[in-house]
Length: 202
Image (cartoon, rainbow, N blue to C red; front, side):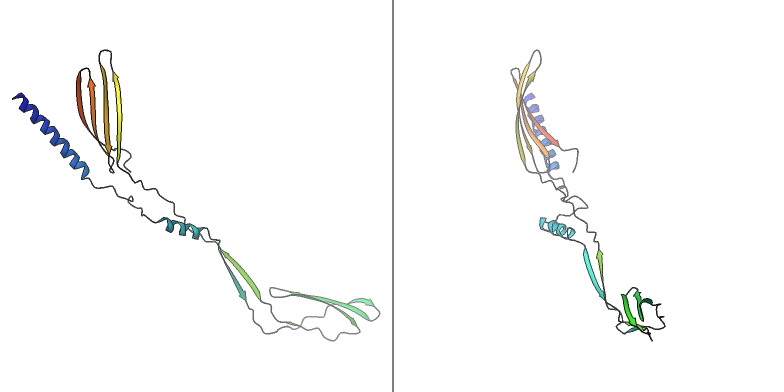
């Protein structure tokens, strides 16, 4: 009767352990990539980085001002400066957004008129536009592999010596299943180990 009871307890333990393993292995696999993230290829990351490293755009615009001749009527004749005898010198200039011109004239006698006219020049305008391009930061997504560990233990206390061996299997979900053997004195002990990762979860 005692043997039957012992076998029943052993069967219950095996069934309980098997059920726990079933529950752990049927857990939903963690999201990959994590929520709020996406997986992209390295080529895509490299292309975005290349765009971010490009120099800012430069736009050159040639502005053609009105081509008709511009007259400046009523411009007074400058006061001449005597040079020698009947020779005098006239100096004048026009400086604005579209022209920068000056003149020095030597005249012998009397100047009768003084009229200015000119055609506007073209202007080339260069505008540099700075572009702010976001650079994606690579995010490493951990990919877990199946692992198997073997370890030994030795120890005891003043009256008993113990040694043993552990065999642990870690799957992709980071669940741990292990077998333990311990020999204390003249007796052998066998254990089954279950474990899971608690922190950090990601």
